[in-house]
Picture 1 (cartoon, rainbow, N blue to C red):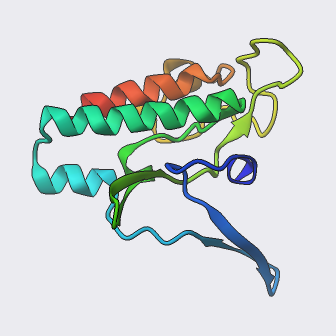
Picture 2 (spheres, one colour):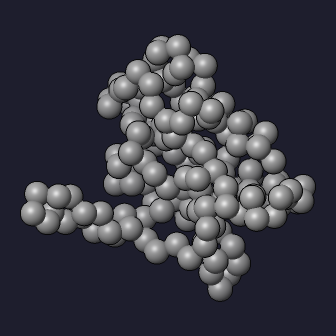
Amino acid sequence: MYALREIRHPNIIQMKEVHELNGIIVLVMEFISGPSLLKHILSKGHLPEAEVIFIMERLLQTLQALHNKKIVHRNLKPENILLDYTSNGTELKLTEFGFSCSVDPDVENSWHVTQNVCTKCGTPGYMAPEILASKTSTLSADIFSMGVILYTW
């Protein structure tokens, strides 16, 4: 949940409140009216090229915002991207930051994860080879996952 406290972006789900209830942490998140990207893809069977370009542009801009803040998501997949139907049209919302962490902010161009490191995290089909091999996670692991997402169309 590190990223949710650190960044505000129109394509990242917002955490509204955090409460403790009988020793259980409860997160109150922004309401998203649409399905996951996976359900959207499955319902259409095949997405038109223009829609794929729109989705990938938004996702890459969102990922760039995260990486500029030295945050790596580490669990990118269509199930963690929601469609939000608003009066301004359809927007994408990146969710599920349970595996997210930061890279070292004190090291110029640092790409190695320094906090909340786990050897393997995420969904195997979307994991970068270095994570599957139990090597250090990097921001480039998110880029690999984006390539897998694009390939699903």
